[in-house]
Image (cartoon, rainbow, N blue to C red; front, side):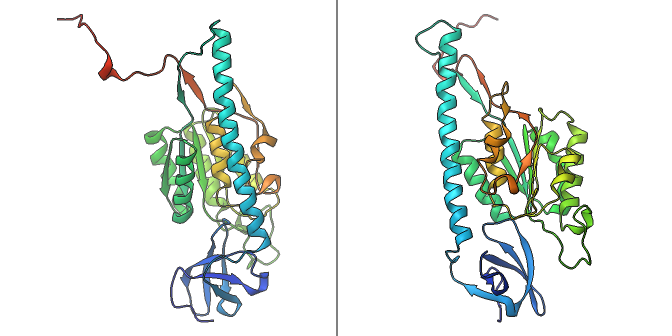
Length: 301
């Protein structure tokens, strides 16, 4: 097969065309390809690639789309339940039949992504879910430096570190315990450690880290609250976003239940895991006013 353009959509014959990729780099006889829906980077000989105009309706992709839709609907349902629960609590605490107007302070997200396309999709989903977020396209090898610069500037409640990863197939007798067997897990570890040197409290800074087949245990041991991938499977492109959104809208006085969090991911417990963590959502009273509507008598000459 001849590939003349970067950006071509392809599938691999040897894997039954189960995952659609985009061509990122063309070498002599091989191409570097990145997953369109899964956070996977791979290389393959041209002879193994089949060009497609649109992602084929594979069973894996169809299941992922169904699960992604269900996860989004679940997040929106939880959001509505949170609003109603807050109203009822305020009425009870203030002995009032009418809940006072309040303002919300959901947890703020800093999202660093090694894939520009996934970053764009992630920011669109944050906006749809009304999660305050700043995102930056940063190669995995530069994430530790970016974390060092951006954490004091952005001051987030939640840090997402993701991109591409995978177990290296050219390793002889690869060892899954060894970080050298993974493409980018060591880079994620370095970035997590940099973040934890800035904020050691796991509830003050929630860290979501990893990509496809990442060294789950090493990421957790380095200080991540949630990480991929316990079973070294592919994770969906938006799995880290679902976890961050759940943390952003879980009340500060509550703990994210691990099973509940994993229900918001496409990959489930085989793809993502973590530890108990407090939420980042707060409310405030009274509701912030439009100052242009206030009539104020100045009190100081």
